[in-house]
Image (cartoon, rainbow, N blue to C red; front, side, top):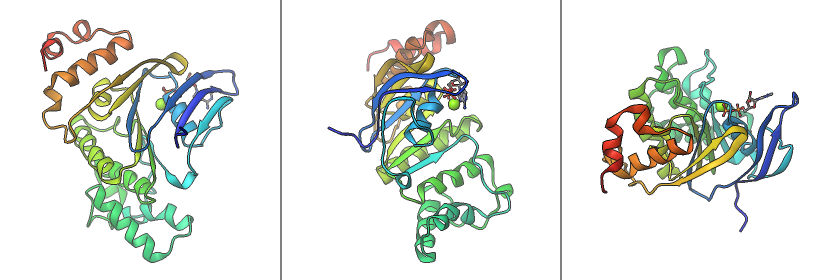
Length: 258
Ligand SMILES: Nc1ncnc2c1ncn2[C@@H]1O[C@H](COP(=O)(O)OP(=O)(O)O)[C@@H](O)[C@H]1O
Ligand SMILES: [Mg+2]
């Protein structure tokens, strides 16, 4: 079966000779949530840019829908400082030629989805880092994309804000039923969010696939043995032993029966 989103032996060699991906194959089923995790420089962003059509592979194949069906969120919210939250979200829709009424409806929907209804008039400098990221998310969601690609979106935020945005992203995914590919270097974030974690090592080599069946609401999941087991497996695939690296707190969770 043809997936709408897939990498098939995708290769990327940059102009300077850097081999960023060396034949990565991954299918992304419709409405699935996949995390790509791996060390800095292993090719995560390159894989995401191929999926977004921002880069063309130098070998292999990439299958994706048309550009307007893909939303992309970067680590930096990249908002225009002199435009309101509303106008930042509306801008890509204006460029794409949507009517005023349609833009109004879509921006309202997106602000609502990220929990910022009523804050459309705010300028970026009036918003916290977490809220700016929410505006950035809303901008990607306003076009109601079938695919949402996120490149370490919450990595620059403080821990508590990140945990809240993780939960909000899960809610958004469940509401919008889009296919999510989430890049992170955080083992715990990948195991918490994703149904499937693809562990990449050097040049996008697929070291491991961790399939997780988390509860939909994630209630209590951070203390569940399934979560700790997944983290242990992902860490092991990356060549780390959580027992050794982080002491005994994690090992207590990992070993216990579910
Ligand atoms: N535009 C580019 N030109 C040359 N090399 C690049 C470019 N972008 C990324 N790279 C290199 O490709 C490799 C993979 O990069 P990247 O996909 O950004 O990894 P990650 O997101 O996992 O940190 C790294 O060695 C990086 O330095
Ligand atoms: Mg990157």
